[in-house]
Length: 217
Ligand code: G3P
Image 1 (spheres, rainbow, N blue to C red):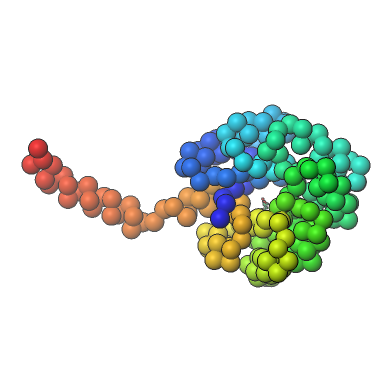
Image 2: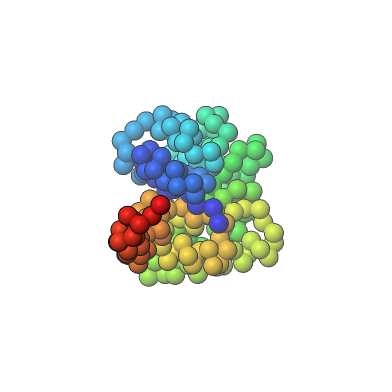
């Protein structure tokens, strides 16, 4: 399973890239706004830290605007994936951009029908937002299961990128199902890594070693 960082915070990206497990980065307008930075400047900074897909989302909602932004962003760097909303214009833009060889990540996916349509139109990545489904008492993980099964049935090349991840169990369950990618903030990577028994174990080993360290040659 690939791990993407779901943030535009460059310090977090540098920190977790150093763990050696970051395969890409996803951003969106809210994450860029949270950092209060220029979009292109920040995206280019990210490309210098992570050598993998960097999702950059269009702001336009009309077809021509989406295409203009997508082509501009794609020219910035070879690793840019264009994030498009799964709307009618987003689907049309996807169909055009995929024929041009521009990499895409179809976002704001909430049902398997949307996932099926974007796979047929040639999306490279599909982003089901599982946390936002859980928030409205639906089962986000069930959506991942359905999409993975549909894509396997027809050998679609589109990769399933689990997004809107809220806790480590989402990551584990996605891995059990066989989703291709999980994108998450650093806080969830921290929760995946740390366990109090690990920390206690290290402390105990060191305390015991203290008793015999002067005997070492
Ligand atoms: O990658 C999409 C993700 O950022 C959305 O997460 O927490 O805003 O639902 P959230």
